[in-house]
Image (cartoon, rainbow, N blue to C red; front, side, top):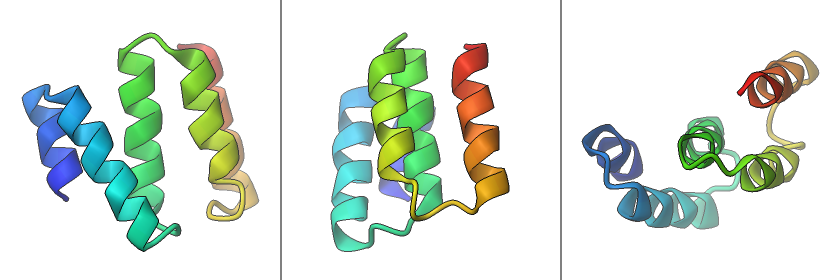
Length: 75
């Protein structure tokens, strides 16, 4: 949750570090993947957003996975 709070405050570097630490502890945190995708889209870095998207393949079900891909493509 700390990473999400940093995102709300605009501290993107701190947010990314905390979200990645959360994933290191539990790789199944959907909210962390979604937040990291959002963070990279805010930075206008679609390539990195896609990287997090593909890293989350085993976490999201098919419908959620397709929704995330469409969200990335629309930005």
